[in-house]
Image (cartoon, one colour):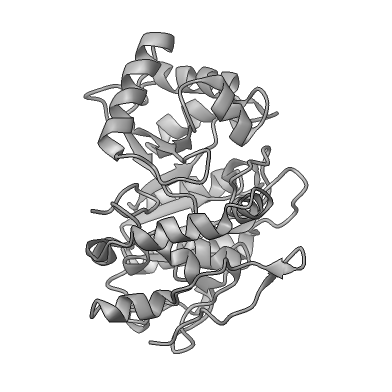
Length: 337
């Protein structure tokens, strides 16, 4: 398996990969580990960088000014893969996925394939023109909604995601609760995501979930199903912040020192295939943002996808991978061990 630590990608004149005194591939090797894929269970498509927010920690570098969006031919290729190969889960992310013109077409057609559909919904997009009926749309299509909420108070949330985001997020969760999302015993799933607001690792997921459930119910009468804690990856805007605040080296050392070999088996790159807005394939959404392509031994785009060619492929790695293996591990579904 080849290491990609030497890849040099620039961002604002600086390397886009953080400095690391230890190579991730060598770290795996020292534990007699090798990172290879299993069967693809999740097709995660990033439909573009257009978003109504410009969050401080965003690894996608999304904002209202971005124009990169997935178009109908690429959407059709993704749907064809779902139909033909019956991949169990479609995970739709962005940007704000709802802002691309063909979002609702993608969802309604994907539902017909029988796949579980996850939408990574930022809550505030619900208040954009033409989006006020999103709770009803999600309910009709039985979408699993995953939404980021940095904290259960306004100051840290607005500091990370923008002024006024907290109040809108609380109102959006109320609207989702009103149509049945997040209610115990119901079948409409609303999961929240917690990202630390500084240069530190997230605390234990179960403890944070208990705090969020208690405080959101007591303060606002809100309900949700699960809370995922996700480690901030040293990529894009978060890496820029680490450098501006002179925390890059110390943060990387925290990730490296917290390396947990038991997380490797459960890493999301082992069962997930990432698709960008152009149809290019990657081992994960973080590799996608760094343009670290998938193994050269397999087809490079969704237009040429055949599942048997992707099993047991070597996963491309770099310094940011330490974020997924620190402590209890981190994935799009929270901790992994």
